[in-house]
Length: 165
Image (cartoon, rainbow, N blue to C red):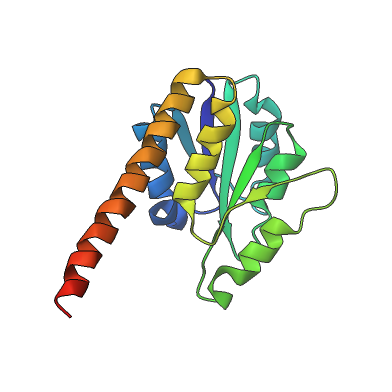
């Protein structure tokens, strides 16, 4: 199975990406987590993405805040899917990062999840990899069934509480 890279623009993004790391581990997907900057280490970021396919990666997740050009810089160097996680900063609550990540020029797409939505980025990465992996597809189906069961159980508990009102 191909690996997933999680590239953070800063080590301060680790608390945001931790749910993605955990989700990928739960699904049995090898993950490499690195810090690279679109602005401070652009050559390193470009080299990483240029060589990502040859190094066994199938998806890159890029987590960055503020100007959030990391996803675009990584996407410019590869044709494997790049998923952006816009990270919330003290300024604009992540809306600046969301717009920077979403508004890519034609031909260099970056799939984008919600602000700080690392778990969704991991699930999307797994879904991309599962296109060619029936075992991973089965894990994702089971995960969705578990989520549905949790909702059904919560609804049943709510219905019992409402009888008391």
